[in-house]
Amino acid sequence: MQKPENRRDQNKCKGLYQLPSEVLFWEAKMAIDSDGSTTPSVIRSDGDWGPSTSYHFLDKTGINAEIVPYFVVPTYDNPAEDPARHDFERSGDNFLSDLNLRHGNLGVVIFGNKMTGAIFADEGPPMKIGEASIRVHELIRPSPGPWQGNPSDKRLSNSGVDHGVLYFVFLDLTFDIEQFGSQKQSQMAEAIQKAGRDRFSKLYGRTNTSARHRLSVF
Image (cartoon, rainbow, N blue to C red; front, side, top):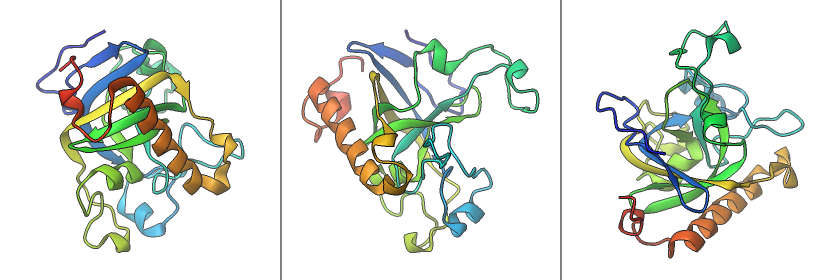
């Protein structure tokens, strides 16, 4: 499946592609998602912060955006599902069911020559795509990444990446967060990074060269 690019699209999304081996791909911007973070200065610096994530542990703890690399996809676009929301565009689309996505799907996010494994852990506003956790920004953006001023101050900037971020989702793989639990999110984050890179390498070859040069879809 391919959706044509809309040049007025603020997501800067250049299409959604179903690739062989059950891989979903898109290229878009990358906004900052701070949901699940617990640092007070992070919470104060992001007016959209939420205490949890759509995918969370059995003890109801959210996945911490400062620790775990995760990406965000749009939620359902149906006002009847949640009358209290006012950001629907009434398309009737459901990104998850339409594209066979599941919470915990493993993937990778690439910007320039940097890549990290990541999981699908949060749902964002309807019809808006291109967002990832603070940790993803730290791993693949040049310093200071998502931070305003000194990164040690833990104050988020208002800017993400405007375009050119590559998202690959392995629809046949989900990452079981309960094998680590909410108290071992640092160890879980390392495992996610490795699992995503390993799967990408298995499908497309070595991970230290540009994805654009390896994938015929471009």
